[in-house]
Structure formats: structure tokens, C-alpha cells
Length: 332
Image 1: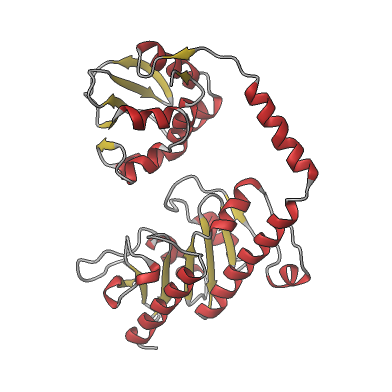
Image 2: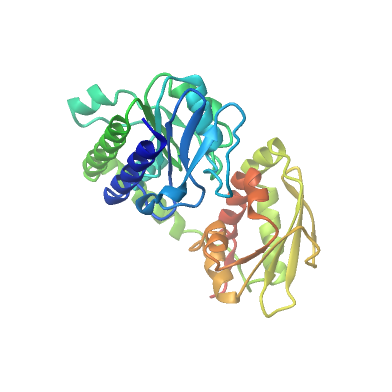
């Protein structure tokens, strides 16, 4: 197959993923093997449903070199290792919404049909802690047992000799998850557990603080330093950094001085490599747990001084940090 022919096929696969709702916006990436030394992969930041020939990058597998200014997908290391460790000729990586939702709360697939058991088998589910696959080894190992792997809270990776086969297993899993999800709507035990959790949440009686007051931020520091998850992940990932948060239109600035996951001290200036700032209305949504800080930054609702990519290695503890914000109640 020529480069042009493979490129046109990748473009058609991208449209198919978009039309079936398996890829939206700029999510997902595709690649195909050109020959023993080269692959063709979608460029970074491209929308799979609107691919053009200029959105495809030829990459050498031995040294990851490519020509031109268009950069390949940030998932190139994963794609490269797949080709180096298997006989696969195509890789389809997308973020199917139903699959992501299902495996966010379920450890394995409850097969509702014989076809699911026969064609999909036991689907490997790999923990995923960063927006980009930074540890491809478990994914490669899992692909040796199944041509389709779920990356928890991230998406799927499918490999095959032909795109139609990689698409088939991906679509089949999305359909199987839909069936399982519908069946679980009538699972009374699941409904009872959800009801109990909501009732327990309503019983909580905690102090209420003025947003961005020193008492408010100190309460956050206290709860973060008591959190075993942040302590564990912070130490494992070497979370030692200065991160400041700032309220637009106010002199209120707070700098968290992290040392191995613990907030060793709290300062009141913006002298830090990373400063997150936003107007009061946005911070209120963050502290209420209605707005994810990472999403707010990528969508431009919050401003970040410093490179977001440099924070990705601490994605897990910081996600937990922002989740803990809502544990400290504010006046609204």
C-alpha cells in the first residue's frame, strides 16, 4: 500500500469514528504501518472526523524522526512500541464515551451476549493515571492477550492487520458496554448503594469559610496533609514544587510549597513556577466541585503561568488535590 492510499484510509477511519461517536473534538489518534521501517500517524491536535492529508505524519520507527513542521501525536511512543512488539499493521486509539464511563466504575465487562464472550473475550483493563500514556509497557503486555485494551479513565487501544478489524472490536465493545449499562439500570443493589451514599453526604456538618480567606486555604492545607492518597502518590512521584493560586481582582494569593507530596508551608505571594488564576465566579465553581481545574485551564476559564505539560507527571496527586477543594465548604 502506498503512502497516499494508507493516508486516505486513515482519513476514512477517522470519519467513521466520529460518525459513530467514538471520537469527538481532538481526541484519539490513528496509525498504520507503511513498511518495515515507517508508519503513518495522525498529527498532534487533529480532529479525527476532519482529517486532511496534511494531518498525517510519516515517522521512522527506529529513531522516531519525521520531516516537516507538523508534529506526530503525543501518543507516538505507544504506537511505536506496539509495532516494535507485535505484528500489528494498524493501531486505533480513541476515547469512546460509554466505554470510559463504564470502566470508570466497573473492573470488568459483564457480557450480556454470547457474541460478546466469543468475539471480545476477557478485556484487559489497564490503570491510567495521566492524560497521555506515559507507561506503555503494561499496555503492550495486555495487547499480547487481546487485540483490544481498555485504558481506565482514558480510552481504548485496538490493533489488527486491517483497520476494519480494529474498528470492529472497538465498536463491539461500545455496544457490549451499552447493553451492560442498560441491564445495570435494573440492578437494585447498585441503586441502593447510590442512595445510601447520597444520604450520608447530606448528613455531613462542617464549617463554612469565606472563599479565598486565609482560614479557607489553611483548611485546604490541613485536609491535604491528612490525605493518605496524596501522601503516597506525592512521595512516589516526587511531588516537590511551588504552586500558587490567585484570585483575579484581589490581592489574595496563596502559594503551596509541596515537598514529597506534603504541603510543607503556605506563603502569600505568586513567586512560583506555576500560578493558577481566575475570577471569583470560576474559583467558586472549582471549590464547589462543579469545575475541574485541568479542564478549566485547557478551556481558558482559568489562566496558568507555567507549562501545563510539565505538571502532567503529577496529574494524579493534583487531581486529588483539586477534588479535596470541595471538601472544605465555602459561603455561596
